[in-house]
Length: 167
Image 1 (tube, one colour):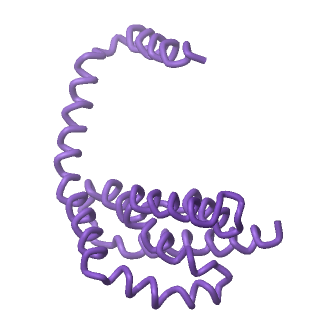
Image 2: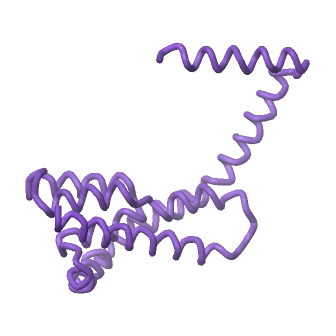
């Protein structure tokens, strides 16, 4: 298994030599493009991180968790997962910290912990990923894909909790 990467590297170099491609020039162009992309990405990521901090520091997070818990309970999701469900689209590390707290509080084999693990594993940090994917685009129609991702994350959580209830 350790030889896979070197074999791929040698195969790519051999293919480039056969096609007479200047590998160094191609590599340099790729690095230049990556640096430009990274610089264009920084304002989007800064905005996402600042919004996450403001969301938590303002108390809006706590109010939203309290307001949303009954809706999640109605859908069959344990209300203890409300904060995790709301944090996950914003922050991977924040949601991992809260998942750890849930595991410590309820135990790894509990229904709530299993639901939390599936919720964490089946969803994505939607806003971070959107910032990365759409940073290079100059399109304004980002609302639809973000709403679809959030709806899919919620649906996967609801379905997972329903399945775990019968398992």
